[in-house]
Length: 605
Image (cartoon, rainbow, N blue to C red; front, side, top):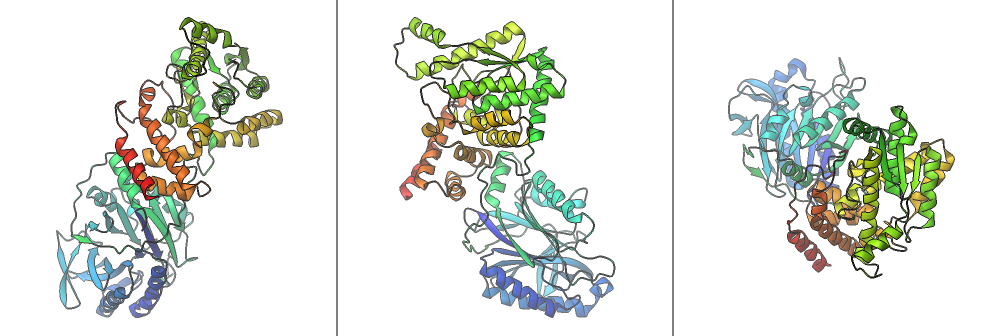
C-alpha cells in the first residue's frame, strides 16, 4: 500500500459444492496469483470453502469437518504468502450451523466472525483442537495502516438497517461483504447503485464479493459479482465469472478524512483487538482523476438546468424581470450568458431582458471585444458598450495616483466595472450576475470590492476546468455553427482579466487544472499535503515535479490569505460536494503548518 491505498483482490474461483479439498486447491491458486500482484487483502465469497448451495447437507458433520480441515490447511498455506485472506465457510456454533468468515494471515487464524446474531457477546467454536472466540459484531483494527474493518454477510445493503451501518457506527472504515447473490435481470447494476449509495451514506469503503460459477443452478445462477465503492464512488466492478479475480486500490485515508470533515461521530469500538496487515508496497495503478470536478457522465445539460433554475428563482424572489452581467469575451462570463440564455428560453422570458455590458479599457484586446459582440449578436440578447478608461484615469488622478500600472491601476478597472454593473442593475431593476468561478474564488484571483461582488453568482460552484468542459460540449451540441466558432475561439484565448497588456493568468499563478486538483484533494477531500503532491505528480505526469510543488505552494498561500474575499462573497449555487459552500475558515487562519509540509517535500527533492 502506497499513500494509504489498500490493494484488495476480490476472488470468485470455480466452486465444487460440498468438496472443500477441491475448492481449497483453486483458492490457493488464486491467492498465489494475488500475492504476485502484491495484494494486501484477498476476499472470497460466502462459504467459498464448501460452496453456498449446500442445502440440508450443510448440517452434516462430513461437510462441516471438511470445511474446518480445509481452513486448517489454508492457515498453514498462509505462512507462504504476504496477503491477508478473508474467506467464508459454514461452522457449527452452539449446535447451530452458521455462515462464518475467517481472517487468516502469516500462518495464523486471526479472527472468526459469525453471520448470526443469535448469540449474545462472545461465543466459542472448536477449531483445530482448541476453543476459538467467534463474534457477530466484530470491528478489527489494522495497526499497520491504522484503519478499522468489519465483515458482513449476504445482501446487507437490501436490509432496512444494514449490519454495515452498525459496524461503521462502531468505528469500521471498510466493510467486506461476503455474499452469495443470484444473477437476475439488472441485478448487477442495482447492486452497484445500492452499494455506492450505502458507502456514501455511511462514509466507508465497501468491498462486495458474491460466489459464482460452480454453485448449484437448481433454482438460481449465482452472480459472481465483485464491486468496490469508496464513500460513494465506484472504483471497481465486474459482473459474473468473466474474471476470477479483480483488483482495486481503496483509498482508506480519503475515507477516514471524509469522516472527520463530515463530523461523522463513531464510538471507535474495537471488539477483538488488532491485526497487522503486511504492507506489500504495491505501485498505484489506480490513476487519480486529472480533472476531478468534470463529471465522467458528462451531465452538462443537467448543470445548465440547475444553474438556470437558480437564476430564475432568484429573479422571482427579488422581483427582477431582467439580469445584467459584464461580458468580457472570456470564458467565465460566456458560460453565465449561455446559462441565462438557456433559462430565459426555457421559461419563456424575452431575451432582450438579458443585458450584457461590454466595458473595454486600453488593455482590452480586440479578440475578446469581438467575441463578446458576436455572442451578443448570435444569442439575440441586449448589448451595451461602456468604455471605462476615461473614468479610471479620472479616478486615479483624483486619488493622486501616477501612471504606474500597479495593483492600484488593475483594481481600479475591476471596481469601475462592478460599480457600473451595480448602478445599472439599480437603474433597470435587474439582477446583477457575477461571473467569478470557483477556481478564482479558491485562489482569491479577484478584486475585493470589484469582480468579487455581485447580487447572485451562478459560477460559484463551477471550476475553470468544468467551465471549459461545459463550453466544449456546448460547441459540439449547438446547431449555431457561427456561435460554436466564436466559443471555440473563447476557449483558445489565454485566460486573463485583461487589466494589463498581454496579461496571462496561468503564466502568473500556474495552470488551473492543477489548482483544481489541489482544491478537490487537499481542501475537498482533506488529504495530506504530501499525498496531494504525490497524486498530482501521477495525474500530471507531463509536468515537472518541482513545478507542481511550486504550484502547490502558490495554491496554499493564496487559498488562506484570500479567505476574507470569500467571507464577503454573495450567494451562489452549490453543484459539487467539494466546493467551498459551508466551509468556515477565519480570515486570520495561518497556513504555516501546510507550508511546512511543502518545505519538507522541497527538502526531499
